[in-house]
Length: 244
Image 1: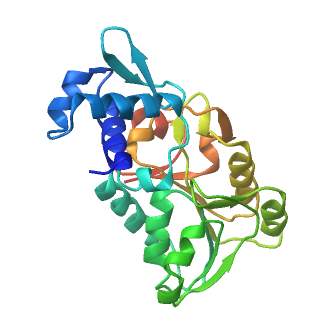
Image 2: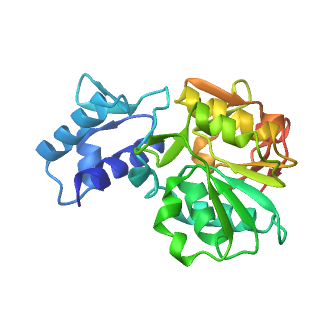
């Protein structure tokens, strides 16, 4: 298991537990030594993803940070495929749609390129599947963030202004009844809110692990989108439509 796979597994285990001791992590990662786990935890701590506590315990950082797309793509794969299938069902032939960056949106992109639609995207993962596409595809320009395979910034926002979308599909790092939909990156947040202003119908693709989580930058309010997820949530459904 290579380092980012181990670190992804550590983060996934911590998402299901308030905190864990290193010995607990060792039990869940057979074949990985304590010294290797300590190195992984130090790396995760440097990236502000976990907090190391006295006594050999560790917990997730309460403030959500942006994980690399390669790591996020290993989480909740079944749930993300379910969400992407639900999203495909919302699209009609010849729709003009926008597909955001993020691991769930990348799965949607892979499914949508075979449809009779016009896809506009800032997700640079499109270049990995472009040769298979039958859909018409437009890639927005902008500043490239390789960690999340995304384009954003002033050029991106300017280009968004040329389009009116039938459907848009957005990602987010956290969704909360008080703070709305949030992300760690201001440019990504501004891009998402700009997209919504140019959309007839907006959807948020978000698996249930992100429910009641908060990152540092607000993107938009809950009532601006319809949530497509793998589970329902009573608190969220009071403020928005949820498809599961």
